[in-house]
Length: 226
Length: 240
Image 1 (cartoon, rainbow over the protein chains, first blue to last red):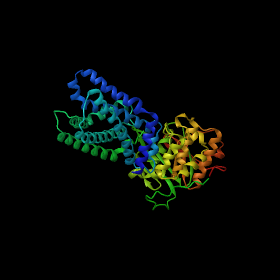
Image 2: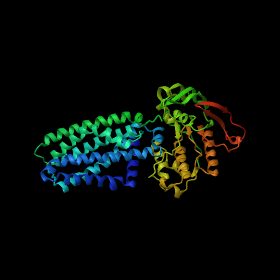
Image 3: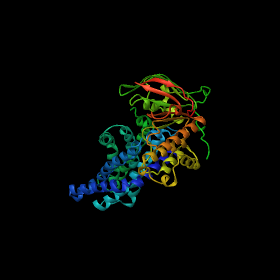
Image 4: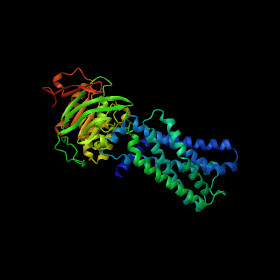
């Protein structure tokens, strides 16, 4: 785990210096929220769709973050250096996933706050634990699947569009579960807190599955026979 | 400054340490996208040997290095690096080797020191090893504190080499390490490679250089069409 933490720290330091999250991803995600609000143009409709819109914006933003995370590894061949050494590929995967998780968590906090401000969504004190847990689990799931598919396309040409094409369908269960759990936390009339927790459990299963698959397959996926 | 030391912390399969060959390739074929980049290579490199690999573009030099690093699969033949059978478990060779390809393997938004430090942290090397490597490669404090995206090609190459030095790999695989370096830096690099071999490391590097006196060349293997076309022993005055 020590090596994973070193790699996560490296990724976060690079992100801190490049400011991608702050300058491009977060503004893009907030803009998506605003545009959805303008397009829907109906307060009850917006309120009902708020949770889904938050996680849709998260999904698009996650693709940008993951793409960047793998660009820094492949631009100058750094990944070859990582893979020829004493670092286990699973540690590289976990490190990159951890760094993505931290960034996605920061983005999720921003977007949930954005939903509260822009859409008028409310979170009761009794639903706060559900919201925090669901957000943590969804960010974990998104970082695990994003890092896995980032590795899948890392050595392919046209990887920008391929990442979206391959990863988005796979994240559908996560999108549904995160949206429903967040909707419950927002106090929606259509779903109760117990159901919200059930959806959160699905998020945990999703995250564990893709974390395990990513750790197992990362080395093979990152190898390029070219 | 401390002398080079080959890392001793790798514990996997040292049982065959009596075999002096660091690299043993027999009828090696590597197909990339259906094309045989290596078409029957036979090559033995002893431990502590320095070998220059020459040949025109597309003759398989880089592929041979990547094969030895466990980064490409063997299609046919047999290959062993540090007694690890690449056909059955090529990933097992990776802790032994250090590969510097055409690209430097650096992170553009990290400083030169941070790049070398990252390598050191990952293998558990001490901080003074980083200082030693930077001094050895003549990377001064100003350059060390500069993000590598702002460095010249030569400075980036030196930083990559410093990362390799700090790793203390048993087998160094260098793809045109002299590229981007001035004459003085090339001589320094030769000296570094010699020191590494004296410390027990095996070094193979590719080169296109033709303007150097033959006496300065170590054992030179020339590839042509994916096979070994000539294998000339080190000549008098060679680094080894």
